[in-house]
Length: 108
Length: 119
Image (cartoon, rainbow over all chains, first blue to last red; front, side):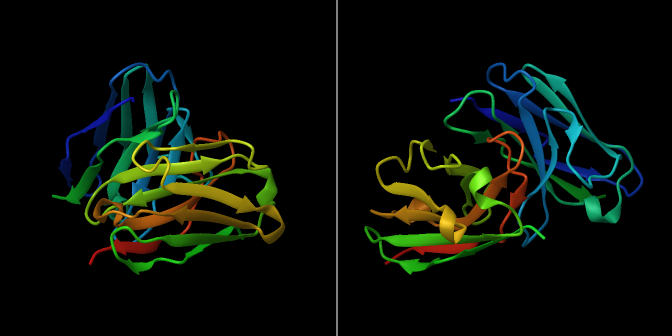
């Protein structure tokens, strides 16, 4: 099973600032990596797949990069609606499909 | 509009059974892989199972293998999860998810249904 590790667990950022979230895989997942956003009381929402391809309707301030075992989600200028929990997920080797433990982006 | 609506959650005793359903609308259900993903209270996301368009391929996370069964009825645009021998650790919100592109990426999610396993 591929273990996904996200850091930091919590990121405190001021609105308008840049946020950088990390995701590491226990072995190479190539570019088969997705990012999801989840707000309290809501279902997750797909942001990015293929490590860097934004899903339909996702603003350009969200960008993904990386390959192999190291990945980054960057939010270039945080808006109020971006404060949420973010999860990475690998889909290179499965079953099982595995998620990281999440990074909570909170208001500083 | 694409919509996924889960139902069937509730309180069940350990060792009991429950059948979850997911009603799909707004897209050609029979053309896409579908999955169940769960989230224990205050915890992260855990993939549970997925099923191919025609139901010919199914996969499960190890912790539910042999206890849970995923199925679908394309004529009824519905996805199901039969859960047997339930344990306290199965307590979670269960989400139905649609994969539009890669079968392992969850493009659209339902709002979830809560399953509580407790005596």
